[in-house]
Amino acid sequence: MASSTRSITSNHLCGLMQALSHKHRLAIVDCLQKGEMDVQSIQEALTLGQSTVSQHLAVMRTQKIVKERRAGRRVFYRLRSEEHTSELQSRQYLVCRLLLEK
Image 1 (cartoon, one colour):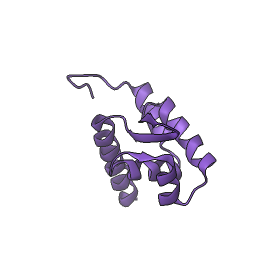
Image 2 (image 1 turned 60 degrees about the vertical axis):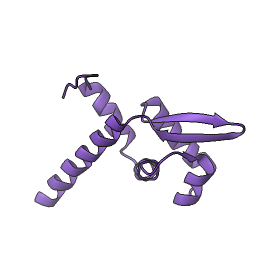
Image 3 (image 1 turned 45 degrees about the vertical axis):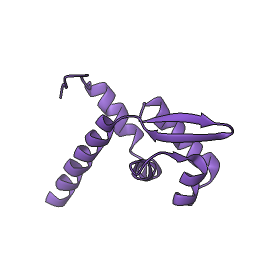
Image 4 (image 1 turned 135 degrees about the horizontal axis):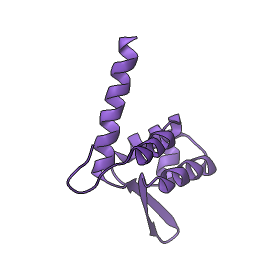
């Protein structure tokens, strides 16, 4: 699982998977795969309250899944790297295959 730029450790991957084990966080990732969004836009897209979205984004920031950018009073979020996006997509594919095999 090592790459030329960085090796993803098992602990890091476990933390990443745990952080994404909630349906709202997965929905936020889906939104952010389309591009950068501010908190209000995420709220509207997912019909969630501001505190709920903020709490989930805090977990995702801790695991370095998202990166924030402030513009005045607004806070914009984006996925931290394409490495995370491709890793998430491959894990999602694996989980779906395992579920279908049951």
